[in-house]
Length: 511
Image (cartoon, rainbow, N blue to C red; front, side, top):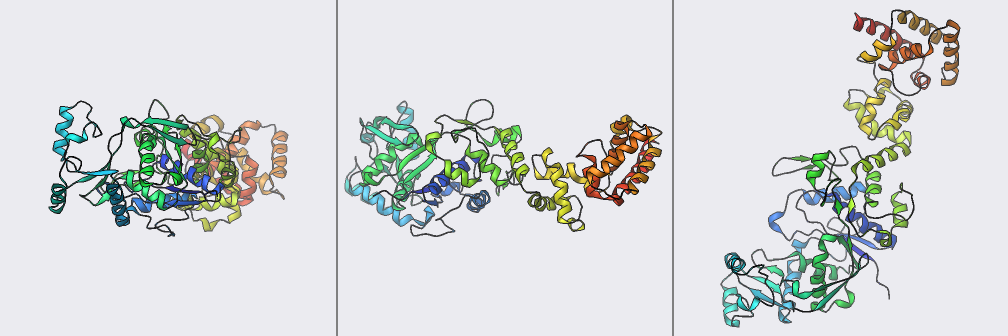
């Protein structure tokens, strides 16, 4: 019988969620949804020293904003909880005991100072089959001494006993079979008595087994640990139900070599976190994609194509389309360069495709922030205004600079345009144009344009100079959408008042 697909995203609450972690969560989600499976969010908080307040809430909020749905987790509940590792201590203790009883692990009392001395004594020291016999552990000490030290509260760790000389095979859906010899592995610490918590390696194996995880999809930085995890599944007798592995390629710097970091974002001016992060310790604020004006659909689409492609030239895909088309067969094994300019392009494309009515709703807070009451305008007016200029922007807040003239009179007029397009005759010509517009019975774009252009031709005026002066009065500068689309939306009264205001203010500016 084929297993139900169950995947997990298991971040540590040690700070904001890196965009690379977001991509890992997304790939887990796409694979689960495509196969009718479950998406688990497990909080791996076994490293109590690195816990950061607010990080867990941040993770949940970020995934929710992006539309990455969680089926089981701390908030959602589920039949396989608890979903926070710090609440699973009893489970881990039982499994540590199982390994000790089966002689698959041992207790070690070596202090930090003793380990440091060994490193100084032995070049490239590794705690393994060749060195464990000379260390202070339950393999070299009498049982009574071990029990006495534990009873006295002496700190200890439990180490996994790895037998050397064996080729360990990792079955990876992306990379095929990866073989690593066990001799290069050290006897990893699985449990520390100091905080009564397991290390990542033990906790993640136990949890994945008990939560019936079918596929472990994670970053390639975990590939060196995979042989250890295979050996742990075997040690517990779980080899037959071990999950399939997928180790995803790294996200690389936009320039140079190496893994994408926060410093790259700071240096080049793009976020590396999904949401803005306020460090509770230092007070530092790190930028986020949401606050920078990115649409969640655009971020998802952008991330999905970092290390995966659909097999054709199609780039714009909704979440449903990504779910339908996703496969590990089209994932790259090499790192994916993080092209943040491509992220901006995706955002522009999604803004262009967004219905003007929806975009208008998102633009209303920007109007408020710039001192404009959206209630002073109809929803249709705002929608038509943003619809005319959205092709010129990448982000919603950029709409203000492109569309502000629809909502407020120009505060100033571009000096270069005045110098180029305004002369002593222009105030009189603009007065005449006002009269022509006042006489219009139809303000629709095509109708008004015909009347005005016929008038300019009849008068023998220079078309470019008159139209640019007209635009300067209404917009404040010689750029923007089609002039008569603007005046159709503004209406006759506002257009005439703008011309009058422009004549007056430009005269004063030229004085």
